[in-house]
Amino acid sequence: MSDALHLPQSIGNLPEFEQGWVWLAGAGPGDPGLLTLHALNGLRQADVVVYDALVDKSILEWVKPGALVDYAGKRGGKPSPKQRDITLKLIDYAKAGKRVLRLKGGDPFVFGRGGEEALGLVGAGVPFRIIPGITAGIGGMAYAGIPATHRDTNQAVTFLTGHDQTGLTPDAINWEGIAKGSPVIVMYMAMKHLDTIAGKLIAGGRSVDEPVGIVCNASLNGQRVLETTLGTCAKDAAAADLEPPAIVCVGEVVRLRAGLDWLGAMSGKVLMSDPLNLHETAGSAVRSG
Image (cartoon, rainbow, N blue to C red; front, side, top):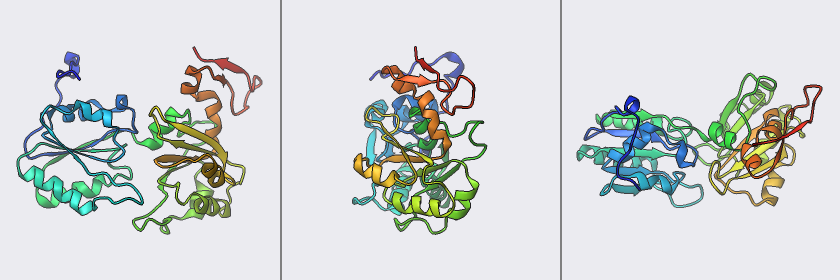
């Protein structure tokens, strides 16, 4: 790791991390290259880095020498710190005059509880900065060759969580309304209840044959992608031994992966120029590079 961060003069005037502040930063879906310059700047100045389970460990190599690195990850079904305790820890570090970087996977405001932590800081009188990150529901799918939107398939997309605070399938979600109204559905933390969720969407009017894409370990070297259908996705995921963290996408955009799997193309996969079969040259193939 180089001690110096060499930036062009035009973007070298990044903010100074002041003592007693907390920066709530998104680390992106996994690939360290998707970290923002603001987050990297925070890593190089922070006295304390409090990081989540989904933050790739290689990102921590950019922490400045001597900084305290504090793990506060939460994983479903495993002993995890309480959210209140994490927030209190941030407050205590800041009140002690530390520069505190709270590093969260994806984006801190997209199913990341960043809003809860920020409001806790407000209540304690601790100043903070929000540093957005690339959320897995967009960046992770892009690494799988699945766009969140495409003008030939959808003009809307819904992001939802597959479990609520109790760990169960959220009852507050209008599953029938989403099934009827959202052409593309992107689900976080849905693997545990995938069979139930698929059943609710089918009951709401979605076809059992609708394409589903499941992306595990998105943007990392161990990324796995399963293309399946709504009627069989839970069974197929179990058969493939897929485990969280994963993003589940329901909708016609999944079929675009046949033409947009850029990582596969780098390994020799032949891409389809018209995966939706919309034009006269439907099905024509092109090789990347």
